[in-house]
Image (tube, rainbow, N blue to C red; front, side, top):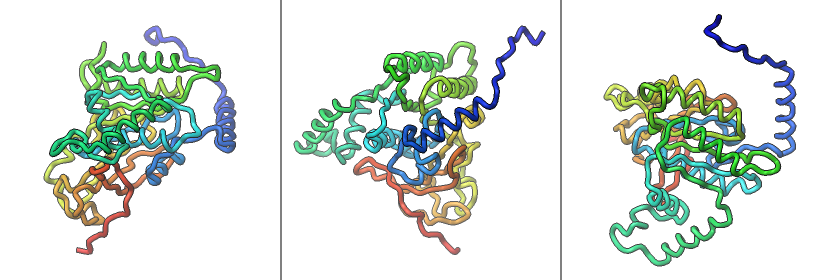
Length: 324
């Protein structure tokens, strides 16, 4: 009967209410805090920053700056939340370790990748010395670990489980920010026919992990190619915007995510007037963040600028609109 399924355990909803009261008290007393970032509007998409036991999915096309976004977020939350004890576990499937290291140095010493790599002239000794000093300073907060090897969803779960056990203290599991760059690069696992089945398994696995451990997931995802069609680039139309259906394998991740963010770079798509509001686009480095889903915060659209000279994304005011 019922294909030999076993019954599940039902518990009183009063238990959930009791846990909610404990969580409210912990927030009130400052014992439970969110991870604040340098972006005020981004923090508002959550409850004053990234919350533990949540899943955040960020979608963008290549060349938009989503990897920089993730690296800056990790860098900033470490600096801006010194009163919190947490670790960072990164699944980095796109870059070599030394390339990742150069980008990290670039962000922290204020020189771009080409300068550090002596593209036009040898890197200045003072810049190199700042890189050395930053490396030496990381000894004090060596809390970031990276997995570079491609893996299946099951191998990711096993890695997270082992990592949480390894760093467990007398007080229990340590809060851990887990970043994934990016979702489509997981290998097809046992029983999975294609990438879409893999993404379904990934969504289920992330939800299971956040229930089991005090983790916060930040997952980078691609967008479908249809976002780049001529019709979607028509000036002053709703199609200019990033939509939740643009997310690659959207159904698989949307259902599980607590926050979904789409990053757009209108200049790359030759859009001069962005959306029905007709925001005037004349800055090639202007980024638009579309908050497509937010369980506990604010949805909407915010503007940022990618400053490639110092490898940082900064909040900016909305550009002016056209009356024509």
